[in-house]
Length: 226
Ligand code: AMP
Image (tube, rainbow, N blue to C red; front, side, top):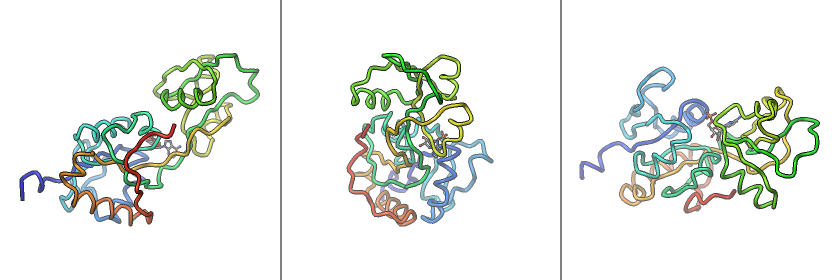
């Protein structure tokens, strides 16, 4: 066996919601992190059995780590994966966790929208594709967070953001207008790694598929649907 094939698989995860929701699936698959990232400053955390090494990265960086082989596999929200574009990664599993919706939202009782409304979003690619498909002209403004604030201060007429219960929207005087796409977390795998380390990666995919009790997707890659 070569040195490469005995090194642990690198598994990119982001702290917070994705980590917390993925943890029960990892545990069911026998891949238990030896430390919790919220209790550690380490960015590389081995699994208790040494089979994988978890890399703690920003949610929006997970597809990039997997695309370039910095990680062999990772878990990422479909919202983030659509923005990335899915280049160089396979998307073998919808884990069915971290479910939410990518939505257009705006102020409750808003006056009529201008001809070319300004739309604030962290997801410009998905937003552009959505409005273009509907033949609607918009001006997109990229923000990195607190999107709900933008219409309240006149920075934007609308927002495109992920919404779960809608309580953050309501708390800020906004309401959902239309859904762009349902979102859930996906397992993604580096394309070359899937060839070179096929047996190990297939085992992890099967274990996680069993853990979330879903049939393995036959989907070949994460071509975006937005
Ligand atoms: P965050 O931890 O907030 O960066 O979110 C990480 C991922 O969790 C996002 O990319 C989404 O796929 C998903 N997500 C974001 N907001 C929600 C939400 N309100 N409910 C469920 N999942 C969410």
